[in-house]
Length: 120
Image (cartoon, one colour):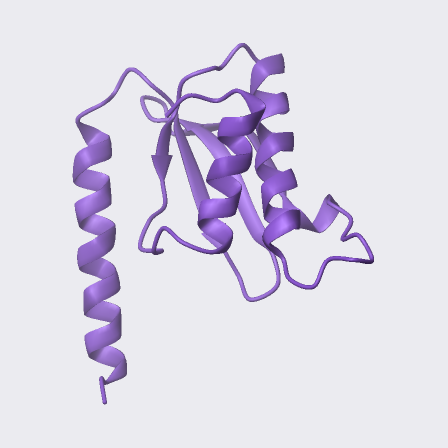
């Protein structure tokens, strides 16, 4: 069984690996994702100044009665973020998943953002 220290170290290595790839591309803003147990938060950050351009939370997206999980909510959250980005004339971003693995709710949010028109 893995200890908490091993799990944290692996997550930190994943995070540093993702950030190293992102830092090579400085001309695009980054789409940064945070996942809690209940919600997903996403924001578009200007990497040069470190300021948030726009952001969204899955708290404001209603869950439909026929949905069992949160994948549909995350997909619609990504789509709504893409619409907000289009209003600010942003069409290309770099996806920053941090230490999170690219599956489940994170992948659904990314697919929704792509479906909404963001390119990454």
